Image 1 (cartoon, protein in one colour):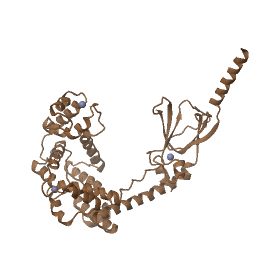
Image 2 (cartoon, helix red, strand yellow):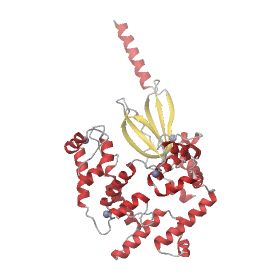
Image 3 (spheres, protein in one colour):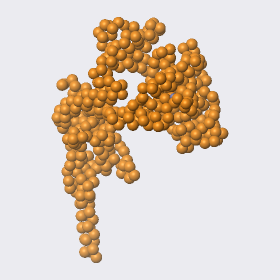
Image 4 (cartoon, rainbow, N blue to C red):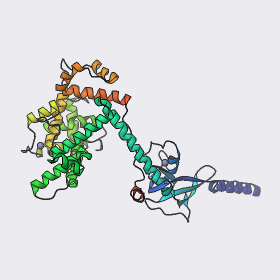
Length: 413
Ligand SMILES: [Zn+2]
Ligand SMILES: [Zn+2]
Ligand SMILES: [Zn+2]
Ligand SMILES: [Zn+2]
């Protein structure tokens, strides 16, 4: 009896020993600390603390190719693990390493955070690599674009610079010399557009409107347009997304849906009008549409038809939606209708399009039709992109590194 008790105690003590004995010490991760977060392990109920780092951590740096799977390096520790008393309390941007002690089963039972010289050791090299990646990216992007336009890269660059100068001259009402002196030809067109809008608004209102003000307004408009985005909650009906994506503007304009690919029209309408998730969304869009009146600035039906047909208005490619939901809804609706119309006799067949994405060639004698058929322009663009993806794939955008310390690193360089 006593012997039995002793045996049980020894086994229990042994088990506890194994469970809590720090069998192995290891460095879990080293890098620039970003933040710590409480999480729960997927499919298990283990509570964790996840430590996030700026890219890249030491392990990723020492590998030939960093793991591109995650946007940010991170590691987790079970909440049950003991943080040692002499552990460092990191602030965002601190270079640290996490040292862990594991038991014989491989579970982390204790850890300590230590400050390191990771930033000095790897920082400049990471930023240098990022710069190299950007150069390679731009190179690959220009090669692709040049191939698409049937030019060589230097021709493409010369043409782009010339286009930029002309664009800025026209938009900002400046001479060639003024544009080049101000460096406006090196800015992307979107920024020139913002600058010109700010200038026009300043003149109109008599106050100073900055580029940032314009951008903020633009964002507000885009957010409104993106009501139809994928982020909004679903009602659980699997067709919700299709319905919303294809019929919200239709409902906004007409207050009904004419024909759907997701089910009997009457049933779908009934769903829209009774579903607690769908109804507010559709209704909001409709109310917004009805409450944005047609103003002087609005596009006429003829304007919209012209844009739909030619992609331009009065020969100008760039369209000003004057932040108007009404014009946007009507344009998207007319465009959808136009692109849906069954192909005319001269339109490209599936076999023609297949040829484009196999050879990349668009035969000379197709060009006349292409020039006046937006439907075929879209379709051939899509198929030519497929060809380009094969012969000159779109390069990956380089990863943004060391977000918490890059400013300071660049200063000291
Ligand atoms: Zn990493
Ligand atoms: Zn619904
Ligand atoms: Zn309008
Ligand atoms: Zn066509």
